[in-house]
Image (cartoon, rainbow, N blue to C red; front, side, top):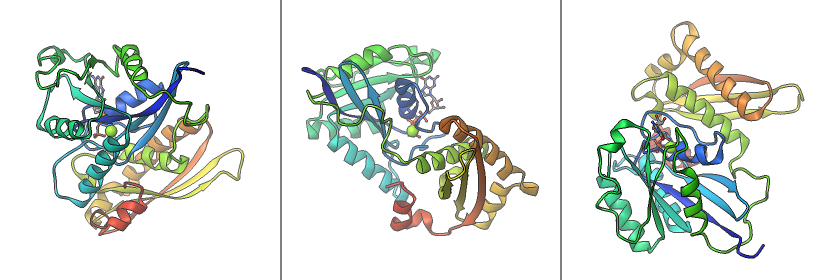
Length: 292
Ligand SMILES: Nc1nc2c(ncn2[C@@H]2O[C@H](COP(=O)(O)OP(=O)(O)OP(=O)(O)O)[C@@H](O)[C@H]2O)c(=O)[nH]1
Ligand SMILES: [Mg+2]
């Protein structure tokens, strides 16, 4: 296997730039949850892409943002660690928005680290993408730029080639059939969180966490999953439960379908809504919930 390459590639950028969508598009399956709201991703997610010439280990990250809240501090710490530890950084720029102040901060950090970086222009399929300058003037001259669309697949083969040739020569770092380092339980919690993002508006998804309490595969015909939806206040609990329990039922149906698709077998999903007033302010809870 002479010349085989393997290494970690960080997907970095502001919230909503399309990091998780790009991860899912290059993997060809849904690993990371996606929503039209910013700040959807809350942890580092490893997605493994095997090729004939390389094993590309993508690290999806939370959108980098500036706000003093504890959860945000934890999310920014993840971004920092991933940028520090990766072999190659992909700095994502939404072509319909262009370069932002968040990119300035990330560029400075990556230059300080001396990190090899590719700039990836996302959402090239949007008509607005043609309006902003591409490549942006702010990109350092030695950073190559590739324009892609996760929606149409445009530019993805070029991006993957550009990534593979920049990885260190190394044997594969993970087993051939491994897709991620995330446990199935966690993936289920994320599917539930995605259903909440899709069904509930405004701020609620941001103050909600999911905790899978039970994951029972002892019955070969059906997987039984029980999970808590943690909210901060009684008023939020009422919204999540909905009138006559209608909202929680909708969330359950949507999440169950997504989990069944992911696991490839029938699922029985039981959801409970629980008030956990301090979770957003407690380092310990944020860590227990897997967001650190
Ligand atoms: N048209 C179009 N929309 C896209 C594309 N990629 C992502 N989007 C949309 O952009 C929004 C944000 O996508 P995400 O993948 O969740 O973005 P993210 O960078 O992971 O966001 P955070 O996790 O919140 O930081 C979603 O509504 C996606 O459907 C694309 O290539 N084309
Ligand atoms: Mg994301």
